[in-house]
Amino acid sequence: MAPVETYPPDWEDDERMSFLFSAFKQSRDVNSADWDSKMSFWVSMILRYTQSQGLLSVTLRQLQTEFTRKGSIPLGLPTVIQEMVRQGTLQRESDFVSGVTSGWLAWSMRQLVIRPLRWTAGTVLGIQISPDEALVIPEVVKKWSELLLKRYPSSSLNSLPVLREEDVQSLWAEICPNPSSLNLVLLQLQRDKKICVLENGEEKLMKFVQEGMGQVTPIGDTDVGIYELRKCEKLLSERLQSACEESDKLKMEALSCKRLGNKHQAIRCLRRRKLAERRVTELHNKLDTVQGILERISAAETDRKVIAAYDVGVSALRLAMKDVNLEKAESLVDQIQEFCDLQDDVNQTLSGASVNDIDIDSDDLERELDDILKNVSDQIDLPDVPTTPIISLPQHPSMFESDRDGSQQDDRSHLRYAPQPVLQ
Image (tube, rainbow, N blue to C red; front, side):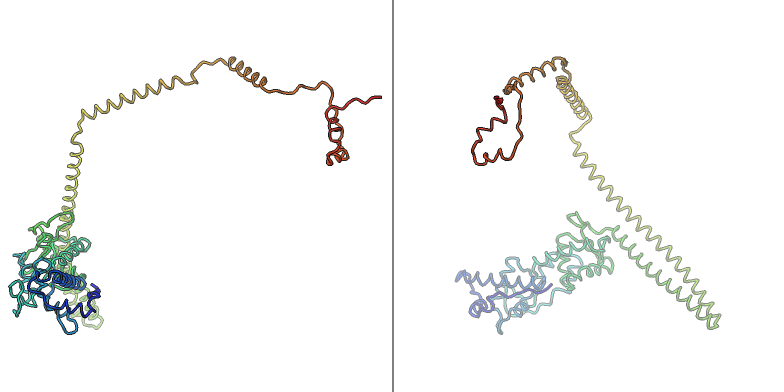
């Protein structure tokens, strides 16, 4: 995890830091405002530092070293640790481990993670505490445990019923290579019932909670049996590969001896090769048997999930059909048919009043059309038709010259319509 800026801007203010580096008053009642201000500053500093460095636990000495400024250490850090432990923001590692009283995880934590305490002067809550004693940050541990739990389903280990300690370490190595941090995370998961731990001889086995389930189921004989079969499959595959390589090696050695003229040595190599080939055949048969059993187990598990899905579907269908029976369905169908018949009758009645079905006489329609045309002709006022012939004079350009000047227009305009007869 990439480090981030840890120190606030106040860190460069000598006057401010002089106050913050001083020891706390014995009683908060002396000056509650200053006491709360100083406490808030250091609690925020500690949490910011642990989160930026990806730490799941921290020690008092580590904090004193980290927050040393110009040769001075914060004198009030023991009081801050006391308050954080009281509030639950920090928890002593021994108390955190005691929450899981059994199992090899708790044992390994007590033996390997909890550091030997070197008692020195100074007390916290009236109880002696070593500056080197680890203090767990529960909030950070929970976040990391959730991260590991989300990473498991998308990994290749998801198909395995149980995992070895080495498998979980390889899964965790990409996130954090610290084994002690892994133990803290696994303890948190075990406390939350998200993993189950079993010691099988010299091996430590773990089982993660399956997706969609609230808690992990205990590791049973079936899980251990499948694990043993998978381990046997892996062992047989390795031995088979080794036997095939040996057979190929003996073949090449026999050819080499033949080329060199060492016939007896070549025959011995071929005899050993025959034994190796027989061993390859035996290993093949054993491996096929083990793989067949594993395939049957996988198919049975798939069938079990399918049956469980069918069971859920039947339950849902039964709940959906709770208030439905055959008599009710038949009644509803009869009602629907009745309303459909009624609607058909209404539609037929309405369609019977269509204008296409009315008997209309075509002669009446023609007489009505003649009356309409007659009425329209009477309403139009046209001028009388003239009885005298109309003579139009040819238009000459000179006739219209006076029209442009506005003179003699009225005298000749009547010639266009009704010219007078010429007298002799």
